[in-house]
Image (cartoon, rainbow, N blue to C red; front, side):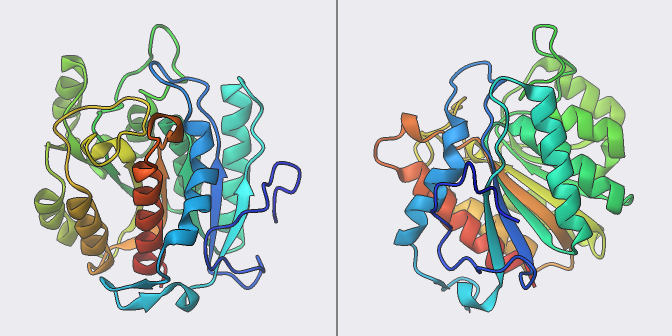
Length: 290
């Protein structure tokens, strides 16, 4: 299962060559059709792969090596340019097939709207699903300038699907007043500004539950990740985000899928953002795929 027509030939370091033998599937969702500020995140997945060659295969944090996990890099889903609905349908269909094969889906975006169809597919298999969301923005709008298919709406959509009390957002520091009011009234959990400490408090309450984790790279301060579509000052450090990934790995939470989105390489000529994202993907692979 590989998207040969759109595939660049590059794979994430130590990717396993065989889909059937793999525990997990890494795939790209190169879409930025609905962004409201700076486009370019459709180029994120391939650049994350390309810079992964600079990674060590060993994680000193987790004492594991990439060769300890069989993960298959399927390439980028060939999404139709400018067609959000068709793109969403294709993503949901692909992830559904990954889940049917009994494999862990690990996606790379792409704008944050791409997480919505993934979580829909995961929810069909895990009706008791909880979502951990790390982001600078609430993403709780019903629509953006009249358009419900927007990168500012995916968390609202999933909250309405699985129930607001099953969605846990961390690192939030930007959003409309109405979004925060809706979350409070609905009983959704939002931790402002920080991730690690409030996450540690929540994890025991999710023990044993299937959990999907979605990370927007802009949860990091722009000093750590300038290459993203909507930068927002006052974010967390890359050290805290790595520690948060490891806290989940060491908990009793059953992570059944994840994604990392909104890397836009064109705005970071140092490639700091793509390199950070690549390391985060490595730690997600080694920490969450057992």
